[in-house]
Amino acid sequence: MTETADAGAARAGRDHALAETFVQLADTLVDDFDLLELFDQLMKSSVELLGVSAAGLLLDDQRGNLAVVASSSEETRLLEIFQLQNNEGPCLECVRTGQPVTSDDLGADVERWPLFVPRAVAAGFRSVAAVPMRLRNDVIGGLNLFHDMETPIDADQRRLAQAFADVATIGILQRRTVHRTAQLAEQLQHALNSRVAIEQAKGVIAERRQVSMVGAFEALRRYARDHNLRLTDAAAAVVRGDLDPEVPEG
Image 1: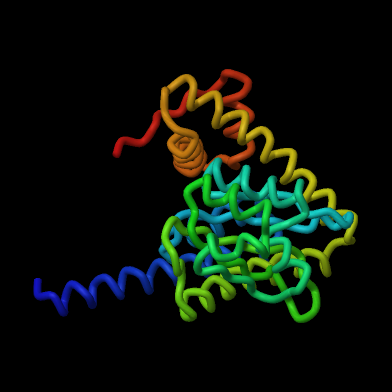
Image 2: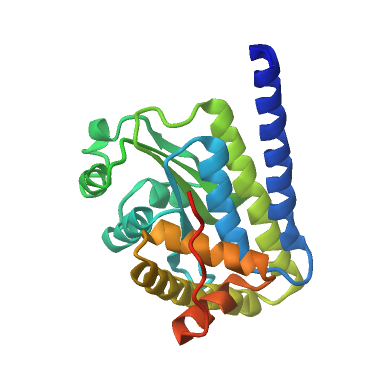
């Protein structure tokens, strides 16, 4: 296969992955959808298709509080929590302003975020971009993209990140129009509670199989998909001791 043919095949594969991602994110428009699956798909697609090192998601719980609802790594989850605890960071700024926030060199932005920058750099990140989960003037959260190199994503990739966030936002807000706000808040709270169970399950698998938290989550997610189970149900089974999923090789 020629170099041109290789490039064409790579583009075709990426276009297919993009189309599949938008279809999966749009699944929120059906009656029975899992918010956790939506959040995790957003994290997975952001890392794989945008070429960043990690991603995190903050979301308004409809009670006036922001919460970490998804992350692609344990380091990212802790960093997002750190932002909330210290009321400082790019994703918080993005949510407050409703505008994208970027830093191509975190080391140069220590005066902007004096607490966040040292913590992010210590976690191995050198740049960040955050895009709002927004529909018109309604901002419900922010998608954070981290990279271990400077200049993480270009303008085209940022537009694609915003498109991912927009599709997910439309789905969540669509549910708000169909159901009462209290019901959506209850669903989001259930998602947060479920996230606790998933983190517990990851810890169990990581300890039992002697793998990283990332490997443990991949094992849990693959088992859930292969057996047509909700991620939450699979996690609960692991915590109860009823399930011990195999860790994917490679």
